[in-house]
Image (cartoon, rainbow, N blue to C red):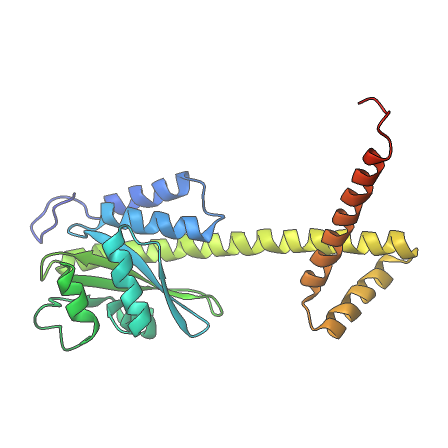
Length: 257
């Protein structure tokens, strides 16, 4: 790991450049879950003294945890989500511009800040936590990167600077992954709706516009999303086609294959 101190001659930015290049080179930025897993794993390589990393997420006012680098960190992130208390939750509720939330010693001076979570972390051997809000676009889930260390006062100003810079780059990569995944889902949805319209056009001899109107009316009457109606229709068509094919094969045993 890179030793950092005010007198260090090493460039603390260099590992950040390398880490982002490595993340991009993995070509997994179309999948948000894989990207988050890569972010937590890479954070351990970039931020000195970090012994574990995980993600705290707020989705629809519900706090969740995931993508931990080991079992103990997964348990602690889970405690934060369950208790809605801890550095990660505090970071989520704050503004990214406020900077990282730092627990200097969960077994000492910081135990009062998170009275339910702190003793659980200390019991599992983690005394310091550095949590950083990953900036996200409006409407997207809010997330915080949590870095755990076993010793108290593990993260000094240099470590916080490196972690904050890494988090900013990670947030940009995460935004790209979310945009790519959203685009892929939009294209898949369009294809399913197009297939459903084709089925209706063939079955009823109607136009593209009329087929879409039928799907929209069915969506409104059943209180289902348009995509759900289209998916059901395509699934039913495939099922019936398979049944017809199977019946035809059973009724023609003499046909050579």
